[in-house]
Length: 68
Image (tube, rainbow, N blue to C red; front, side, top):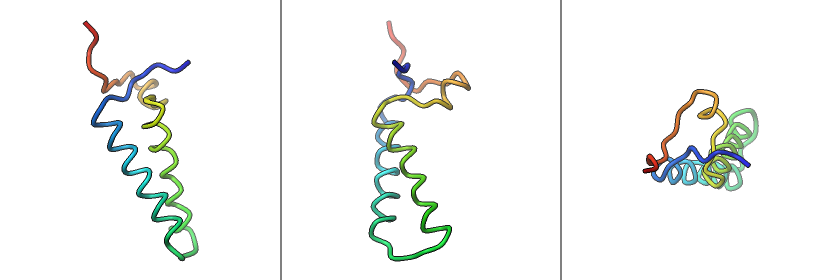
């Protein structure tokens, strides 16, 4: 379906940062723009879980190890 273009460390960082932003969103009782801006964590979380990044595809970047 999608080309895998997100490698190991990149994938782990995306998952951790995305999850942290979403946890912060659900535990914080704030309101306003900055509270809802934390929902951007959905993007790195999904790209990390799916191991594919549409922006990387457009730019021709891949952090996956080279295949022999």
